[in-house]
Figure (cartoon, rainbow, N blue to C red):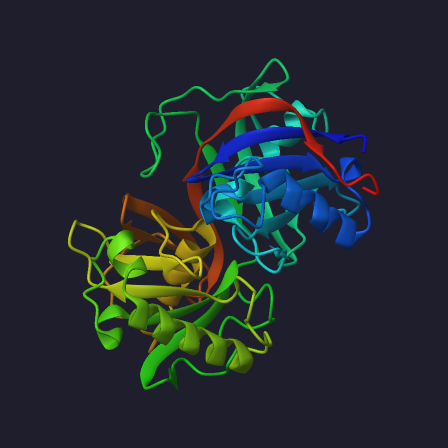
Length: 357
């Protein structure tokens, strides 16, 4: 069988990394596309030994990019989470870290005309029907990756990429509180279900028997905890109108606790089967937005609010991430901004065996 060669850019985006493809280079049929992506990553296999994946959900991700036909966007971006040990490709959620590399990738693939010293790229996330503006450092028609911006969870520094999420109130369900309630009770635990960038179920860590400051390894080894939060996640998903959460990555879960290192709040974010080594960007936005909702499980936190903005510093296992919320006069969130970085690692072709693709 003759291998099929597909152009692929392997890139770190934020605290994740994955494969970036032009939509035109992948099969248009979804089933064939999913088969191709599973082969690219080497799934299902715990080590993903026969593919590019690293045996971790944070390095088993895909960005599919094309020019947009929308008047308000330059690019369409579809995110795919490829399961490590199951033959599942989930496109129900957005990924803000992989999003960090979308604009640079599009510039490298000549989809975007640039300006100096920076280029603003308008991105439409197909997964959640939401818009994001990415500001990329550019020079001579090329994205610049070297710089002085540092993000916790990634060694060294790089050029900053500013992401401004335009649609942060209910992009997937139409409601920032999709259950209609500020708090709900599932499995005896009080939670706040938020749809902001991605749907997330927020709860106090102490309500599930944790301090909220444990390492990801400790939380991943706590089987009763994982069973408990999965039961909560599934029940919340139904009430949020998202349907059965089995084999789907949304809604996500975050365990919240008081900050201990100068932040606004501490969070342990689940992907959802494992605790994130740092924090998802979309999840950070959901936590930050929840701090503005009176009565939510995150609303009693101290934050820095000045001149129509609120800065929420979220502590996570690798450090912290700052979310800057732009507020309207009535206090409602207008947009959310965050700084990320990205770096291309390998540009070439990846081979798959499926001749029908």
